[in-house]
Image (cartoon, rainbow, N blue to C red):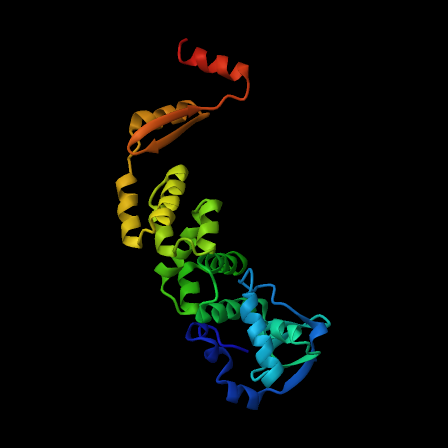
Length: 267
């Protein structure tokens, strides 16, 4: 079983060097039909081109490194090596060399994250969601998680903050239109509409992270107490701030709401 606290040093700290692993653990051929994907896999999608290239390599040279699996009910569940598994299926193999390890859900989730982070296979949102999943499911503090995966706490904190972005901007981050650095600059703005405007400006003008930070700073406007008081008084009021100008919008679901509003302002 892996030792607690050693995960941050990488997969070698968990399994040992591959040669040593193969000496101590029997490699067996397992039918692809009885192998399941890792439910804790943080990657939402795999690069089709990369999988095809790996499949061609497997056809020519075979699988050089076995995957790691664990027993799960009457099947086997992947712990590490999902790309090899997918490529083996694409290459038409019926079975794949594997090492069976006794690994818990917690360790499987940690290993899947570490494998992808070390390979830099995750986009910033996938990485943030993986951190959140480990925290929510296994009750880690940010400090504990940072130690386990070999990161500093600030890295975890900044990553999790990305999940506060509007969905529209998260999609831009996933697709690589903006970087995590750009996203952090966008998050310095509290107004969602302003965030979207800045995100589009970054893409259109191809701003660097430093330029995005300056653009964000120029847009930061403190909402006066008078406006905050109005927001509390009128729940249906929306405040938009553009170039330090205030725009107030009121949304009425029906005529009665409008009449009530008119009465409240003394009209």
